[in-house]
Amino acid sequence: LLASVPYYSMYKEQAEFFDSLHLKFEGDASAWKNSDCNDNTTQVIEVVTSPNNPDGKLKRAVLEGPNVKTIHDYAYYWPHFSPITVPADEDLSLFSLSKTTGHAGSRFGWGLVKDKTVYEKMKRYITLSSMGVSRTTQLHVLQLLNVVVRDGGDSIFHFGHETLKKRWEILNEVFSMSTRFSLQKIKPEYCNYFKKVRDFTPAYAWVKCERPEDTNCYKIFRAAKITGRDGKLFGSEESFVRLSLIRSQDDFDHLIDMLKKLVFQEGVAAHSI
Image (cartoon, rainbow, N blue to C red; front, side, top):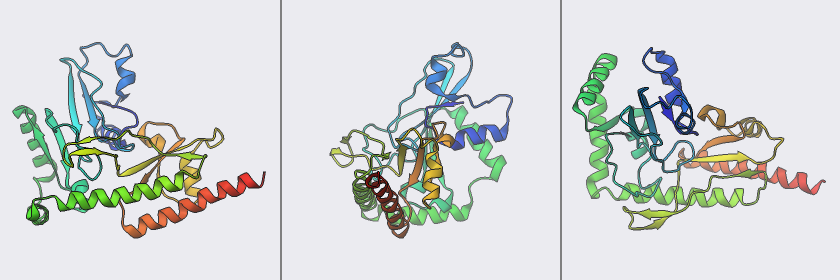
């Protein structure tokens, strides 16, 4: 099992938890491609998260060949997070209500599977692990989606995009005053949903601590009473930390207040030299 760094940490954690003789997490897909392990015979599954968690970038599969199977995780491939650049038309595509409407507590997702044999295996696993999807959950989700499509389904995506766009504008303004910290940069692309070129508005800020002495970005933010996720969890360096931008407005406002204090301290320290 492979994914591109930085990757969603749950892939590694799940593979290690199941501890299967037939599946082992081997880390970065690019590193595998350039290694002796890439022998075109070893059976490989590559997970492509696009847009990526944690950095919000659109991803493509790194590996190819008859020994490679690819899973596309499209949990964040919605207009409020990313330009919709191409149809989601892969052999196996996964989606989640969690990031579509924000109802993460429903634990409801779905997949588009072209291979019937793979579909039957997935169906069998769900049946054995949880006796299928809760009927209460299905009814709850049906009600939510009926509300979403009531006006054609556009309102939720326009609202979500405008909300995240404003949050990113505020966040960029705060970090523009810092030389100690930097945000991920993603070039705008044409969005087939909004019919225009637009910026990415990812669910997470992927922050880098730029100073060589700041070896653990997570600890620096934690000391400033800002909760993030350590870059190391995503197979990346500890000089990165992930901050969530999809919590409530109160949580976001509080995050901005704490970030302003942290950046202000940077300015005070510079003036004291």
